[in-house]
Image (cartoon, rainbow, N blue to C red; front, side, top):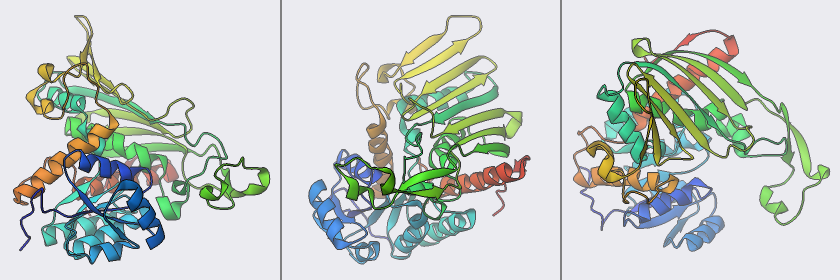
Length: 391
């Protein structure tokens, strides 16, 4: 029987201390939750990062963390190729799991995790934090209540520029570490999840076009940390062939005849991290931009267009709970982690794991894997591919 956990008794461990691991730590602390332990690739690094983040326990491996009986929940912020084995090990150890996306490297692996979590009756979360902006919940209410009419078109993009130059390098560029899809898997998955969350509509079939603008990149010949404080010269690089996409455009056929189109890029100069969507309905349209997350544009045919600012007093009750500050006090990316973990840990502390959770789960991560596999196949074969949800 799963033990009853409280805010005072829960033991939380975080694995991985790159960009996103500390974001998990901050989101947890803002909920008054203490992070008990931190796991890294070796003991020395774990001790260094634990001291930096003021976390009491450090572990030189995930297995060492899982062996600690005081750890009840594990947050996985490790590289993509480790998500499946790490999540599986954590579930087998009886731990609740919060995992970064992608959940796995293929749908067979993600299906295994969904089944295992259900068998073990453990809370399982895929970290689709972008859902948690207040105005995303407002848009969801307006769409699913019929306020903007029948949905016609879902369109938008997710654009970044951090891989614009051929000297830009990250482990995500290597399929063995990041997976077969890069731009689509890394950021496009957030857009795809978000629009399904807002509309309630699943994607039936896809047609994808990919482009790798840098088929050869300059990979540092030594770990990046080695070069800290110096300018790299040509002799510091090796030529590395690239087999993942810099860019994708994807035509989407949703349920109910709804049409969609998504552009994803990690080479769009000036776009640091911009998720944009436009939902066109038979009565009005909605537009939201993650770089202006406190504004929701409402487009009308027969009256003036509007901009709804994030203000709890103006939001639907379904969205109000995701806004912690009054109007004029902006909320952004770090707040989405706080809001997600509020929901996750309230659910854990309530202890009724048969109740439908109000956050993204491994099932959502599995659907994204099915979707990404269809997108990858479409790009290779140059034709429409149906999304297989049978496995």
